[in-house]
Image 1: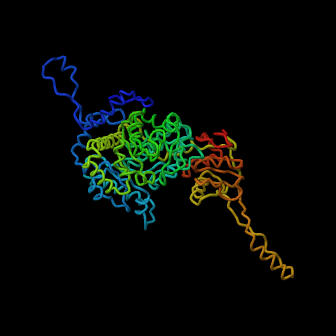
Image 2: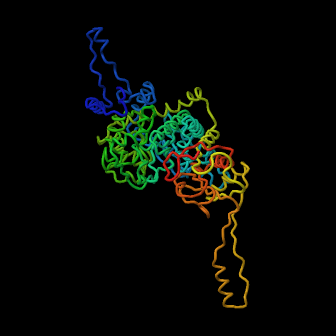
Image 3: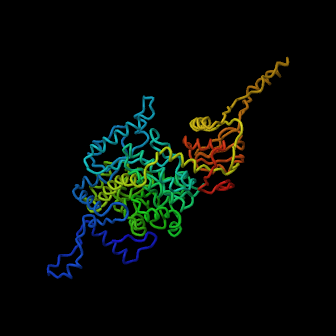
Length: 592
């Protein structure tokens, strides 16, 4: 069956055909063979469907027909108990030891690691990178001792910026908005290939990234700098480039959060966001990066806990058949792997019945991080036995998952031979240098003279000071200065009053140089004199429209590479070529 054109609606007859095909999942639809011996009959007789065709699996998004067939045969050999586990990916339990028994007992398809799984390993040591190395060892133990002969779904949220789980022994990643500011898809692809190579080297097979959402600007309280841009085509280009870079390294990318979270003000971790836009408007905005990704043949999409009123009012997309099967698969033509957003989030707390069952019935494949993996596994088994979920639907999801993981791992060798590999540190450094943006101040030459005084969080100040010293910038300091103690006049009452007033008066803050205000994700300008010197947005750039500082810069990250780029711009060694990827009131996209 040919894939539909993503942006077109299915004709009624084609839609009916899809429904019939879905109803026949797992059955053989070939008619009895004609034994008349007629050569004309033999020429026109339809061929017997393959194992994956019987499951309704299509090509054109990654795995070949033979790879899908192999996965379908593997899935067919699994028991219902094993199938129910294969489609569940759990949160790595607390601690750092590989959860081998847990995974094999429930036949889980994989696990997702978080910060605490890494930090626990470094506890009690002075080696901050020890946790990463221990986790890498445990990932390999898990894959080696798993009772399957295909890759596990070993995932991590490594988006960059505020959502970065692995921070030691890997290249520090700036926010994903950096890619939109740099506006260079080749650079984005190269950087994310480098990041993917590091993740693959640690043992991860999946990155729950990149974010394909389109941020709406200041009204976006959740996604913010996690999105590449506020312009849908720009966000789309960067998300596709990052996803392809991860694939080049053999790591499966998961574009998220379908049908788009960037224009919503409710956090799906704490509630159910409602998307009130009409479908026609969504096609040109939030849906565009996903339709482009489908056209490009990218293999995996994460569905968010978002209720699109235009498609299925009041129902989270992650458990909605009209959204997953109707919109994503039938209308947009996506045949690849559909991953749920984490099912332990409040966005699905109000779903009637088990969310894991609802997600699979809706057409999804990978049940991601349910609150209790064992309960999710058991509810899937029970649903099959009670007839509310077919074994064929489980086989289809498991086969798609197995085929995707095998296929994505093979992409590293092919990309390496064709493209070569650039070190992650150099690639991310180049990305940060291309992204840095000056919206107020000179475009050529030094932007500061004399000493500079960084103001901000202790970690930001420390990284800036290191970069400034390397760039030859002299560092000043902040002093707290008190007025001289009042001299005695001989009038005891007056002297006591003057002394008390002197003690109540706080010291004056004296900045011994040009202040460099390093503004984090909270948008608050740190330190005194917020309209003097240099204001630097290290996350979203909206603060640059609320200050009168003569020099205003966006770095989109607080990493060592971003601080090095900042120091080089301040000294005039680097010309800022970036452009703001979002609208900021009162400032241009670039002053250069």
